[in-house]
Image (cartoon, helix red, strand yellow):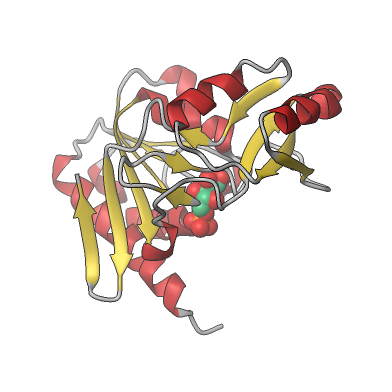
Length: 225
Ligand code: 5RP
């Protein structure tokens, strides 16, 4: 199938992230790897330099399979002490590098793996840049029995939660996608939603935003710090 323009930007930015980390990698380096179509292009680019580092930690079983299909070692996070980089896409990002993530449903593992990395490099095509987060429905991972109770609390916060039918996370939970949130204080809302009993994680990455943003544009990759 021919690649569309957005996919070309995703591929470009995935390759740019691999080029960027390459000089910093050593034989014992571990790279954290995200989930999604942009992260997939990063994985493909990482395959080209797989002999320059030790291995990876994956944020989903899907990414783990893709990494292994390239012959890239994948380790358990519990066995890893240091991680130089975590590289992942996003559904939205603002100028503070605060993110909405979880379109692919991997938000909890993504947040865990990114939390241990020295640097979180977020790779996006330019369509993901917004002034205010929230046009993209915010994914929230929820313990299945708490689905309705959590949904009622989210309505009180002004959101419109929709159950992601037929989807179970790698952790055995469900996802509520919440529309109508106009997010002015992303770290505050991230904390508030995480306080709701039954919520595992929400897809706001704002208390710990990305450190570097790579933006794929038709004129090349724009690296923002
Ligand atoms: C998966 C994610 C992805 O990073 C996000 O959905 C962006 O995906 P894509 O690169 O396919 O546009 O958070 O849980």
